[in-house]
Length: 94
Image 1 (spheres, rainbow, N blue to C red):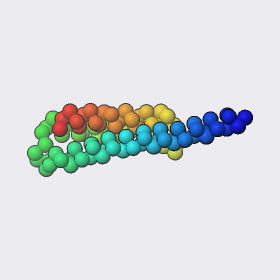
Image 2 (cartoon, rainbow, N blue to C red):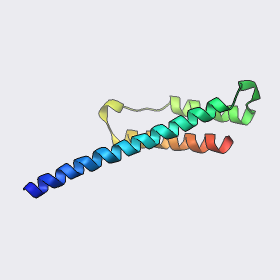
Image 3 (cartoon, rainbow, N blue to C red):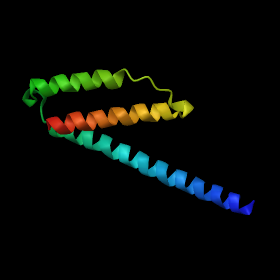
Image 4 (spheres, helix red, strand yellow):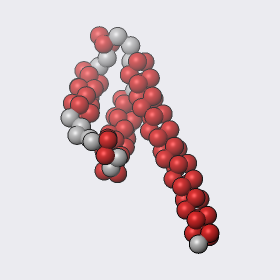
């Protein structure tokens, strides 16, 4: 029984460490996207293609349907997917 208890404590530690690293990665990716958007300069100098991409991403992100208070994995997957799409689109265009 004490072995299982010890393993459960270890699992709890691993969960916290993994969740913290995952959250840090997602937050860093978002910060990179924000920095990239700021570095584009005045809107007059942004290409039409990039403006179209920004509009599309804004719509996609604005239409997200999440229930964060439920703490569901599917919401985390949606957020992760959105951030991956943002990084891919903004990184590709900048």
